[in-house]
Image (cartoon, rainbow, N blue to C red; front, side, top):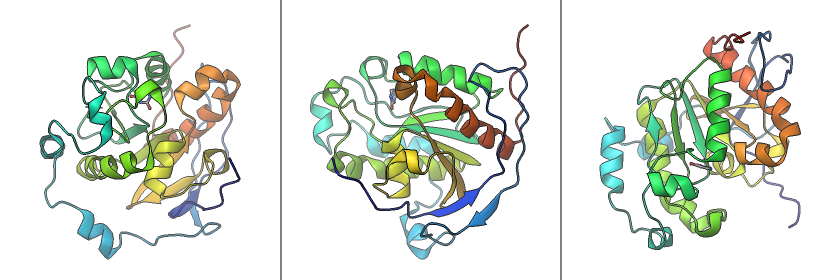
Length: 245
Ligand code: URA
């Protein structure tokens, strides 16, 4: 595939550098000094269009009810269970993945397979539990053979993700992998070019990092992800989990 050029269409923020231990850590130093920079094209603040998009007084329950036993795109034909999302409806931190895989499709819950176990470790390394955060995906039905969701599927399903994020109103959103980042930042740019950078998504800090499934294939990238998560922790005022030794 050729080089993709579109840049993320959101405000970019920059955070001071932090130390970069691997994912299994004891007590790394976390610092924060965020400033807005304008290296990339920006959308300033919540726009009139954002306001029109929002459903007044929306909740996760209403969003889930509206989704119903969805047949809006072709993914419904092969899914077993819809995977709406799980976790704290008032979470300060939301993780957004790509779409359910085999285990998630069977259980109706996000990130419960191998990648999910790694995500749980990442969350716990941040000093949190899965119950503290909210976890969801761009598409709510498993794409066949775990292929990437197609453009029409993302376009059909992402309004429910936007509603979930609006209803939760977290302090930070972490996009796990390119599909989530590209859907929320409306870019086709490669994630390696903008991961670890703060963006403004409808007045909420958003950062993209590598997907846990990518880390399972490329464990050497865990250090980069930990650096990204430390920036998130600094923003949320979190201390990493104390080592059990
Ligand atoms: N990968 C995802 O992107 N989401 C899941 O829920 C599981 C695996």
